[in-house]
Image (cartoon, rainbow, N blue to C red; front, side, top):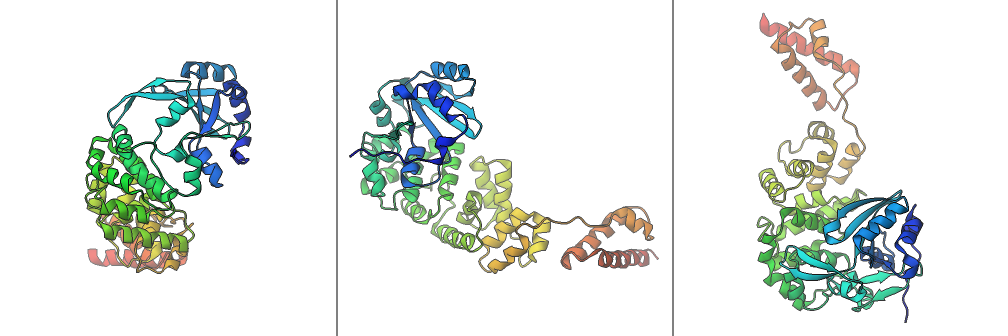
Length: 403
């Protein structure tokens, strides 16, 4: 039976027709591959569009540039270039075969054999290609049947595929959570457990990227439990234990109650022990961006426990306050209504205002202003009339202290 990719929104992306024409798709030199095909068959939204081609990278760039399509050699050493279209980038990779691998990187050679390219991929559901004009699927290793059965299967022997690229250990559990219905293959799981220490050989950036992708999956809990039971994460995240998965699942439930989209960084915070110092160490170890690392630390801060939601948001920022309120199961979920979409106001007076009310210029001005702000925040940001009253009280307090 011939299986075809159903019509999908990405087919109407601006510039895609010109791109496919330049690649010679009508002659069979280009096919959609990977996630676009997999998710398209499942009727899921497609974010990243990848194309495989039998054309060499230099030819791809020449053809696209000749068609007036901006092209960036993002991974030219691995055969990948990126076409920049109006509706988003498209990665184009020349068919490859592995010459040698060491678990971290592969030496590749180009090929024009589609099956040979498919054979070097990790899972059967990742080795699906679709003709961009007809939608006809090329399936060399039973990926369609596995996709229908929600079955995750390595191409070939799991231990051999993991030895080629150790990151496939983490990818296995991410794909298991997203596509595999958490029905683990015993031999694949055993291979992941046996090779877990090899994760230490990978760059921390690759580990972080894959881990955050797992945390973004709708329901990562069971996959995380399998990873902890098998000590998969221990070499790189020894801080994580089973109670962390309980916190992640509680957080996911609260995210749903609040109708908030998942945040991988927030979920990573839930997975870790509730300790800002630990969060900072993990953020540094995983080489997270400064922004992500700061968010992780703020989410697990224990200062200001019981603080009013708006006061918390004013002090640490709206995003961080939402994270903390979601992570604290003792906080009623409706507290988030006060914070979501709220922009912290600016104190409506300045040091000059206090001086005009009789405060002597000098160090006391900054101290007095901080006290005014503190009362203003504690009273949940009253109007300007009340701020004036607070300012007068503080000025009088400082004046009396100087008498």
